[in-house]
Structures are given as structure tokens and as C-alpha cells.
Image 1 (tube, rainbow, N blue to C red):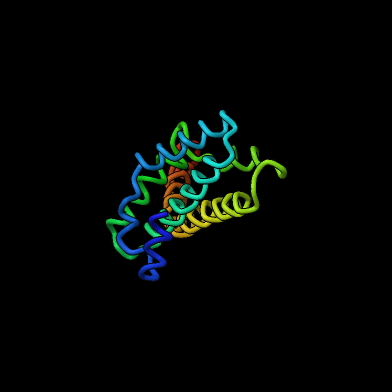
Image 2: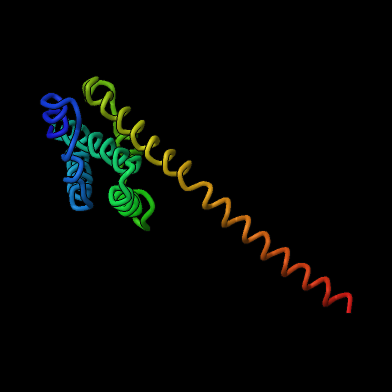
Length: 156
């Protein structure tokens, strides 16, 4: 809602992105779990719409040129997507969707949520892939060095 208001007023999201934190993600994902369990379609639709906006903001943070915003996004993504018990509910929402129960707007929000989630994860994968490649290259060098040492030892 805040994002829609801000875009309507100024055409950009602006400083609304700084309201995004782990507590907000926990609150929304808890609400999603509760509304799915209680089978409340209208409140679930509102929660999914908000969740979609939050993932769009997460992409804005991840793709920002500001280092502080990048660090915020990395911390959020760690807890939301990569933690031992991820808070991400995309699969649960897609699995729960029923044609006669939910509106087309809700389906649009789920599709947008899936798109935003994949966009964030893909962007970060491409962003950090060179670091992973460099690390893997260094590990291969270490393994080759160890292998060479074993060969030398065996030759003696």
C-alpha cells in the first residue's frame, strides 16, 4: 500500500524502501501461514500483495549502487531464502491456489511474487558468480598442488 501511494504521488518508490526489515518479512509470512491455515481468502490476498511489494523492494535494495542498501539486501536474503528454516512462502502459496476460491488479482499477485523472487535470486547469482568462480578456481589450484605433492612423494 505504501509503495502504491508513493508511486502514485511521486512516480518512484523513494525512501519507502528503507521500511523493509526482517521483522516485516516475519510478520507477513506469519500472516500468510495463519490465513492459509484458517482459509481466509481476502486477508490472504492482502498479505500476498504486500509480500509481492516487499520482494520488489528487496530487488531494489539488491540492485542499488549504494553499498549500505546492498548489505541490507544480503542480510535479508540470507534470512528469508537461505536460512536453515527459510521464511519464504512462495511454494506454499502456489500450491495453495485454487481456481474457484481465489480471484484473478490474487493469481496476478502470486505470479508477480514468483517473478520478483526469481528476479532477486537470479540477479544476486549473476552478481556474486565471479566471486564463486574465483573461489572454485583457487580451490582447484590447491587441489592440484596437493595432488602434485602426492605424486612427488610417491615418486621418491
